[in-house]
Image (tube, rainbow, N blue to C red; front, side, top):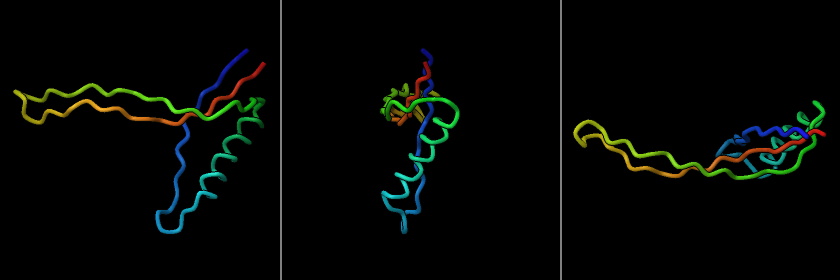
Length: 77
């Protein structure tokens, strides 16, 4: 069995955007994958910790932080 993971980031107009636009973009990605022979299995969140930056002599240092990405999961048998 093969697996494919692709990032998913919906883009909407902040003034006119609706959840329908997000759903349409997600549906388009799923249809794209399925047209290529992949079966959609789910949408997952992946959290990543970004290490802190120490800066030069402590100046410009930045604390570490966690970011979350959404990914689409597909499989092919």
